[in-house]
Length: 315
Image 1 (tube, rainbow, N blue to C red):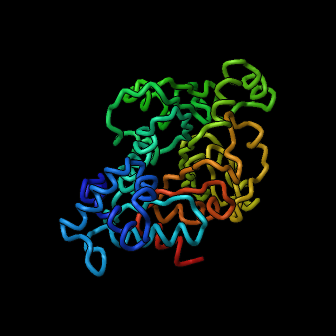
Image 2: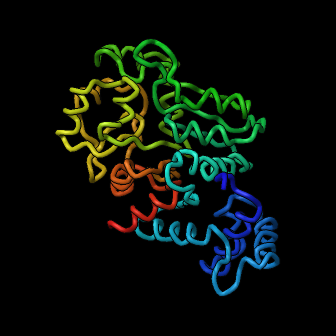
């Protein structure tokens, strides 16, 4: 399995939504981001292929059950669970196809959207799966600074890579991810171009983010944005996870630390009405994802089978 959604995957999902979740064709079309006619054809294909019997006879049947459990347990707007790729597989590879499929459903919408992105390995893998499709009606914008401590562009920044594929208006956040001082950060954020990007990000219709863990393998530490001493300080204050540089505790409440005043970009505030989609999976990320879901920092999730099972088994 490659994690890449297929026509049968779509048909299986439509069949499950129709025959198990009891959705109408209009509801299925909205959930999948397709036309009503396509939703009808997908449900018909699920029947024609023999996928729908007493139970869903397809490899993603378990995934669909987990999705329903996540939505019900955490009050999510939507969830996507990718099939397990097996022991030793990169979790980012598992979620890449499912995340790309969800993003493409928003890109297919006729109305103009502003879509904001964080950074990280999972989002980078997701963008690699996006098909090249010139699309000028949507805007894509970064939530966080893209300049590393040595002055180079962040390796896992996704905006420019996505812009190459979509040819869409794009707005990178031209500030350091971590400034030297609060005063330096304030100077950057006072610049008119930065204010424009920050406003777009804060008012985005859809948001895609990764979720960072806060153990010894914390991305903020591994990628050189904080020192070990700074990581220890955040851990001592109860840090459980991180989203676009904002560190939060196990309840999903942001922790204010000296680093908080240095992060360049726009914090994802809890309780946003629009979709805030976390793309994240892996055993080291379970507690961070759970905290983000609990605190309503995110309201949608793309993950894999083992992570979804862990999120449901310990609630």
